[in-house]
Amino acid sequence: MTCAREVEEELGLTRPVGRLLCIEWQGPEPDRSESMMLVYDGGVLPESQEIHLPSDELTSYQFVHPGALGDFLEERLVRRVGAALEALNEGTVAELEYGVRGGDQRSDGFVAEVACRGASSVVVSSVEGSACDKVTL
Image (tube, rainbow, N blue to C red; front, side, top):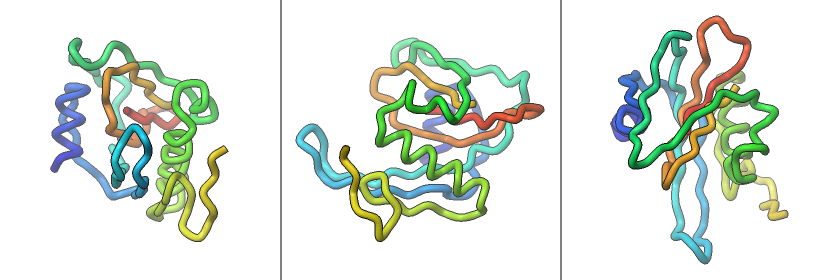
C-alpha cells in the first residue's frame, strides 16, 4: 500500500496501515492541481520506537499537543488532521472538501511535526503510555 511505503521511506518505520480516517478533495489552486488526500490510522507506537528521517527530504520532527497544530501546520492541514483525530475518536471516516465536512460551506478565511522538503503524508497514531496523540507528516 502506498501509505505504508511512504511511512517506511519517510520515517524508517514499517507499520501496518489501519482504517481510513479522513478523505479530502481539494480543487485546483493557482499553485497546484486538484487532489484527493487520505489519512489512515497508524496504530500505537511504543515509546521506544526510533524514527529515522531521510536527510535529503526531512530535517526534524517534534511531538506537540493537538491543540498546538496551528503553530506548526497550515490551516488546511490543521482542519484535515483535526478531522482525522475526531474520526479516530468517533470510529467514523471524515469526508472533507476544501477542509470542511460535506454540506458545510468552504471557509477561506501530541503531533509529530516534521520539518520537510515536500512531504505530504499524514498518519495518525498514538504513543504508548501517553495521553497525547501522535500525527506523523
